[in-house]
Amino acid sequence: MSFADPLVLLGLLGIPVLVWWYAAQQRRRARAAAAFVAPALTPSVSPRRPRWRRHVPMLAFLLAIAILIVAAARPQRSVAKPVTDGAIVLADDASSSMQATDVAPSRLRAAQRAARRFLADVPSTVQVGLIEFARTPTVLQSPTRDHALTEAALARLPRTGGGTAVGEAIQTAMRELMSVPRVAGRRPPSAIVLISDGASNVGIGPLGAARQAAAHHIPIYTISVGTPNGTIQIKRGSQTVTAPVPVSREQLSEIARVSGGRAFKASDAAGVSAAYQHLAARLGTKHSKEEITASVAGGALLLLMLGSVLSLRWFGRLV
Image (cartoon, rainbow, N blue to C red; front, side):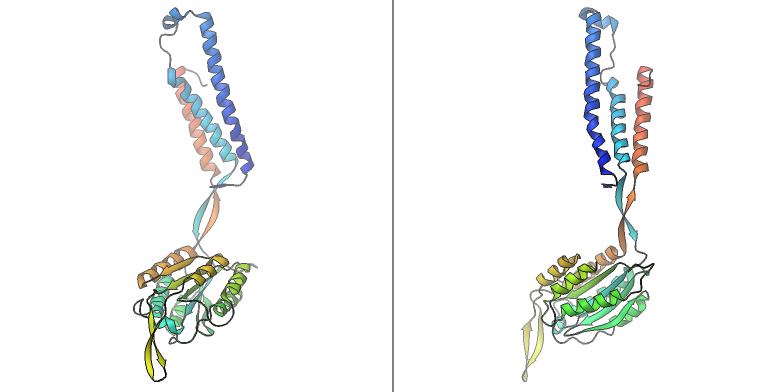
């Protein structure tokens, strides 16, 4: 919970003063009664004292005052609302190491399947594009609200091959997002979803590209797919040999951190799907602050009414 006018909460410092004043009044009444009534006559003068009940109405009033002060500070809560606009670019790694089958049926195919589920879960008002990258990035679909076009582009992902140009993929995705038409002079909220299995080894530095994305308020959500035991078959001369391609997560995590996004780790197909599902929910909603002053003030009024009713019922007076 946050407050629009937090300085008003300084009024809560007066609550202990009111408690001290009330306790002092109770002691003064007790001393006054003792001065006029002998201790031996107290049972006959006041045979039934209310004890704890006499403090309950005042406790309700004090709590009501405290809550009213909180209400005056205009409390707010964060509420998730469906996104009515926005743009996302999926950046899929199609380098040679994505052939590895440690994530069935392969790292790349698992990513494709999960991306299709992602498209099904993201609101239709959100524009989604797709790029693939190995040594160089290629735009397969610019951001569009017609998710069927993006899904069709997923089927056109090329056969894997070549190095991993993560930095250039980020810059290409940024250019696509920056070209999305503005609405009322404002660029729609944007994000990049980057899925890969390793560190960049071709082209510009990915962390510099991530900082550029952060400067344009474009967070990058990374999904590292694969296990430390991944292998692929490669040609060496006339022979085919097995080459290890362990997943490298450190750089992808740093890219997400620098850009203001979040990093996910997926060591199997279910993990890839779970990461995409989480992102669909996260990117399909936005959190905005909603003022709850009326609700808080209503609770204070109920306490005031409760204190008044109890005081009238038990003591025949309002206070």
